[in-house]
Length: 121
Image 1 (cartoon, rainbow, N blue to C red):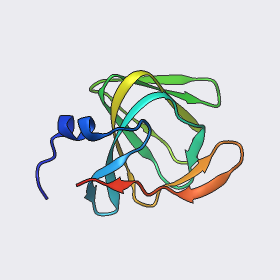
Image 2 (image 1 turned 120 degrees about the horizontal axis):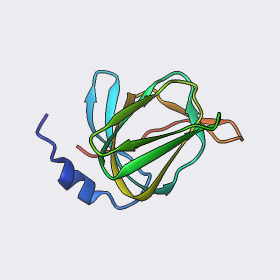
Image 3 (image 1 turned 180 degrees about the horizontal axis):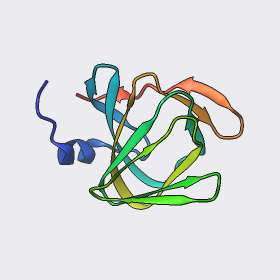
């Protein structure tokens, strides 16, 4: 494993909301993603997911009506089965730490799939 320069890797990401894996620890992926605008309502059936904001700010909305805003240098963990909606007003750089087994339950149509992003390291 070599050193990963986050600024360099974020500059290589071209599409929003398309994470790439830049590290792994056992059964856990470390992903980088650029975000801008809205993602989708979704839940992770069996896994907690940690969001660490490197640049910008990420708002996560929850069905019960509350929001959290994660600013640069802050992190937040969304517990398993919690439906949430990530959104970013301006370009935001996020490190996501989650088990390799993450399954997304997307929106109200309840379609589950294994989310396997590109490996970029």
